[in-house]
Image (spheres, rainbow, N blue to C red):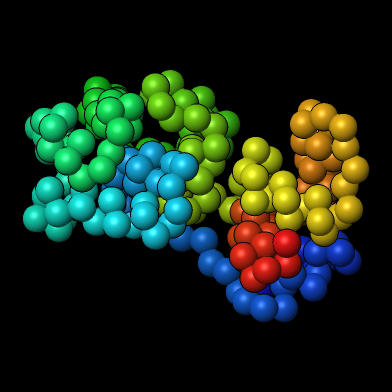
Length: 200
């Protein structure tokens, strides 16, 4: 694959490419993808999947519209295991998408920085959450999640990065990752996989 040829130029990264090919695809219903990301914050993958399944059960197992989400009461959303803050954030997402009449098609066509600038206006949605949306739902191939703990741990180990402050770590990570452009999203996927396989 083209991205592998490019990333293989980084000799330290090259061994990570031997296990699997990754693909990056566009997914529909962006606001629900964003809500799913909020639901999963600070939860294990397993627990997050259970709560998201309960969320869908509120709508007969189907992905709801933003209007349907707003029709749910706080008690209904709390009953599936969400904190009040997450309930508020999910409602904020639904309200924002309705107010701005924002569609998947519009987001697919936007530049990365513009997507981050727009969606981080929503209270409860930070840069990392938007980057995950860009990578896993909007089909963006050059996302680099410098704040992601898993990416940090993997790069510290792989490149033996020495640092004294987070700012210094971020600077070194960004310098290393610059050579991966325009395929940094794929690099992130391989770093997470390497970490999950017990390399760390």
